[in-house]
Length: 423
Ligand SMILES: [Zn+2]
Ligand SMILES: [Zn+2]
Image 1 (tube, protein in one colour):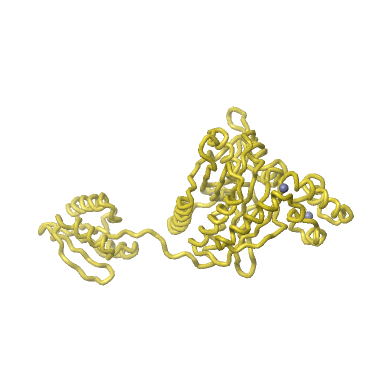
Image 2 (image 1 turned 90 degrees about the vertical axis):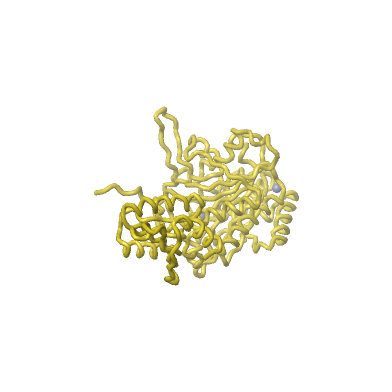
């Protein structure tokens, strides 16, 4: 059997790739407008980076990483997410020496060994933003408003930001105590995972998807109930800024990120699809992460979104038009001599930035015209032996069928003029 691509990966072919390019271009233009700069980190990193930066207890690190020993017996891992790498690069390249905050974004493939199912891939793509070196609520609001702005430009509808504050180590300790107290009499009713979380990470019990656990935690104290004055004021300020920016949001105390280095703001952007809401972007503040990987104490906030997920939402909402790139003109050369002259014309047009294509297989006139129509060209430049002898070519408007003769030595100018006029 012929070799096939690995399970959970995709070939992105012409016809589909235009949608990716459109999405990536829109992302880049929004990031430019917000003053965020791109960073590209390696596809693989020392395994330890993710163990520390994503967390030993997470499903990602426990079950989903592509980890291998390289030929020097070092444990390496294909990156399962982007934040840890960006923080590592921030520390390693001493970006903290620059004016703060450092505002970065990335776009690229990530790798997780997941059970392949519709919409889930083992190699998938993320766009993410990280802002390092500022702890003001204004930064949280800017980051959320960047996501909001992106989705507006893409034309996505039915969006809502869900927001929570998970507090800081101080107020989290209070919450942990109150939550354990609340759950102790009902502990036996929790699912196995939550039993395990009870000591290690009780906050995560609040976002368990098990309906039983959700019933048990009904009325449980939330982190919003126990925020210290500092965290409370931070959260209020973020909400008021989002109102200023016209972002639709709601607070959701069950939105939690359980690791110690997550602090204060946590958010997800939900999109409405066929009657149900699902998350299309997730992020939050991580004031303890850079220290976790042995950098200087640095507040940070960011988000990531799966591009496959965004494309699927655009598809569902019918927000894609035909975006395949088209040649403006197609050069049709008949015969060997005309092919030489034609190639010279095509080269001159391309040098002027005109998208033009040419038959490469010596097809018949009829076949070449058919190809010009299929590719969506606006004009055909027809150069036969007879025209060549008279020093002219036929310029045919493929929409109207109108045709004029143009001297070969004026053809480049004529085509450039037509393109500038947008005909
Ligand atoms: Zn606090
Ligand atoms: Zn549970």
